[in-house]
Image 1 (cartoon, one colour):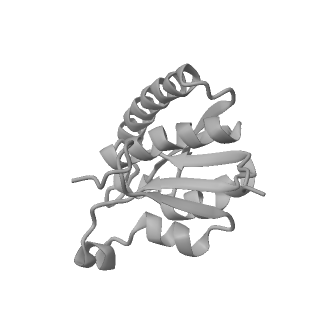
Image 2 (image 1 turned 30 degrees about the vertical axis):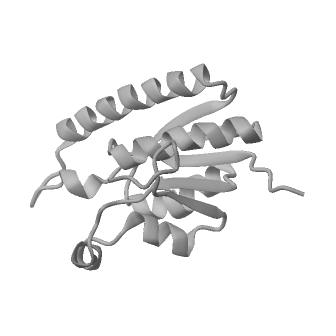
Length: 153
């Protein structure tokens, strides 16, 4: 019996890798007749200064994320995904993508784009995908190839 996924989470951050993961997630959702949940996490640490939180920048980031996610919803629906929703979250991308969103949304597959971080960047920044692979309670698929399954250059 083949594995059937019912609820697929794809994390999108505006990168080309995330967009490829999203497009592949659309294909997987169609093949599985699955719901597709798009999540964009705004890392609030990026908007903090020494003494205050810059709410205006966070609002602009939220609006930009909303516009992108609504465009992705249209794309998914135009490609026969029946059930597609999105959420904009605030906090640590690693924890939200690995734990909170999948638990809240009853996700059984997480799809992420591979990042281009080198070994030194991973030490200092940490890889979201690496954290998700280690801590998620469901299957995780890291997208490393384009829509024709050829390695991205």
